[in-house]
Length: 232
Length: 232
DNA sequence: CAGGCAAAAAGTGCATGCACTTGCCTTTGG
DNA sequence: CCAAAGGCAAGTGCATGCACTTTTTGCCTG
Image: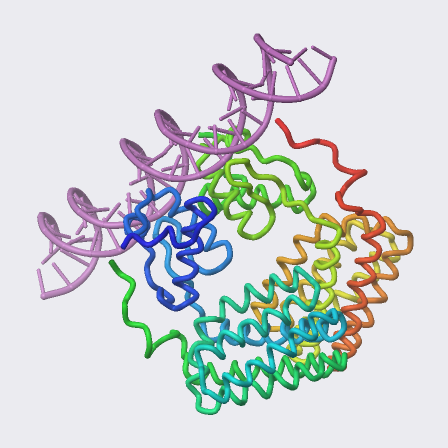
């Protein structure tokens, strides 16, 4: 299908970066998988030049690993590094929550709470798909609410690198309700401007997700799911 | 071929990335300055291809800004973004200090304290140059002591982006002694394993540096220094 | 003399080609 | 039969060239 054109905007390289990053982040391309320049070029119907640039940028942000003269592979995340990312995530979210509690505008607070309450419905219905959407939005609001672009960027970047490993979490039974309750603690703390409580709640929230993920995602995400296999 | 090696290791692109990043981080290339591909290629005696790849990677990590079809410039840091980076830095250092207090090995603690005590001499002598060296090492130890590679990486990256703006700080009279005392509070807290105190001390330390820097570095670092101007 | 327009100049984006490196596989001597 | 050597195919790294976009320049017009 010569997959591109889906993402408008930008140069060919930008599109390639987004396309490949997306495949990595969603787990479609698996850690350690070889990224052959010629194949990718053919796959996206461009020359090797933009592919090379894209791989370079992806390696700069840590999504792929490049061995000089030996090609690129999807970055392999060791168990240890994974743990360090989850721990960092907990701390980053804690910071965002703390700052949010202190800095969110009235509008931000109101819409955070409103969305959060709306998501309760998804829990009742057991609509995982939809809840996940609310969940992502919820966290985004927290990051933006911190009113600190750099923290925002670090947090978003870290979150996306963890995406393949968070995938399995909602397979745990009762996870939806548990997640919602944890969100509720965070929201409540933020609404009353209790920074310390919001930070702690956010940290705990991530820690729990982390532990849940660790159970499933050994080193290779999507051990079970996935399949399409990315070659050709 | 001629103008390269100097920095051993890696491909031409890697060398270019390091070379340009270094010039940006040290302030030799100033925010907003145009990065012409042809000129850089000539300057380093390579073709435009590796230059383009290098610029792409630098833009991926935020050091340069690339406008499609309109060339690349050294990333411009707004006053607001700068503040957000300093604030992030304070939080990141706080995390490192907290973790260090909890996790540093006996060896790490001992050598941290030893180095810190040794640096007292530099303060007495007023050896700014040498103190700065100790200072850098001190912070590095904190980052490593956290035993979390991801936090380590985020912190180092943020620190390097702030480098041009921290430059002016030691121009403040009495800054050396003040800095040492702040370090001392951190070290003391770490030595007795007081994570909360270490975190707070580290955060305060950065905040003070941040305020000091803000005085000098308006938006453009090195307003006074610099000069060589990077063209030709 | 300012404003506008068109053509040239400058500069970026990508394709292509070739040299070099690496890994593998065959060959050959022990 | 194994080990080292040599050669081959695959694949990466960089240079070069051309098309296309943006910016500049110079000329014309009101």
